[in-house]
Length: 310
Ligand code: FAD
Image (cartoon, rainbow, N blue to C red):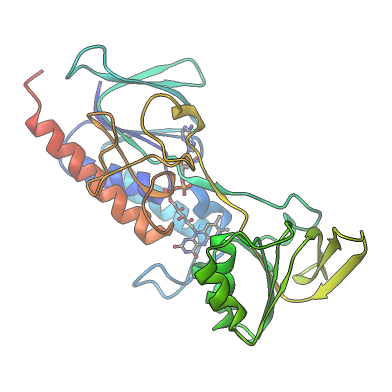
């Protein structure tokens, strides 16, 4: 059995594994895809102390750093079920899709999240070439350019306000007949001179020249007429979905499906900790996930040294 079993191998999981292994305890990582969302990223300019890196390079560095330690890496393994111990202080079980069951004294859940996509032609093709999901990450890449934000909930309106301070012009498109964001955010949005809001707009296609985004096509849902906007960037803000479906009913999740944690990364189940985009941590970023992974590992270690001798 492991002392610490980490589920998920993104920035949070990698940091957790390194911090746990450095305590000299039996550490394992089971990950569907080691590297996580970072592998889908190109330019990274906010990984503090590194001016510029690229996702695949950071993904490889994460794996290499973990491999410097005695960590049992189980890549391409999807966890399907978490089974709490039968009696207090017993082992926690994580069942994998391949039928295996891993046992551990503590578990750190770091299964991350995925952005909800528009699912329209061109979106996939122009990912990182104008199609973006994270204004904190990619906003500055569009300095002085024209962008659209898709989604009029809080995250869409926050993104539009944020981007309006950096880019030349923002068009916010909302599918519904009105914005759903908090009134205070909507007021702020309406006060900005370089933002247009279009409601009842269904995005139907991302246009590009083969290299990068050149525009967006949307349908006016009130009359069915198609329109196209010339722009260089599209920020899709229609939801971040935590990869926690497999945990439903086992531990406390927020209404959005995020694993509820306290400041130490403790979940509602003793001995089970969580970190990164899969949790209720505010803001989903690489440096934040790494910090949270380290916190969760130190908390797991604290839990182990307080547990009765096995
Ligand atoms: P993830 O990176 O999502 O990793 C989750 C891990 O869990 C993966 O290994 C996954 O395979 C695994 N997993 C999921 N489900 C299971 C399961 N059931 N069983 C086993 N394993 C499972 N952030 C920045 O700070 N700067 C940027 O410039 C930046 N750009 C981005 C660009 C794009 C296109 C995207 C998508 C994200 C970007 N982000 C950026 C956000 C950043 O990538 C995330 O905040 C960060 O990766 C979260 O780390 P994590 O470890 O919590 O989760």
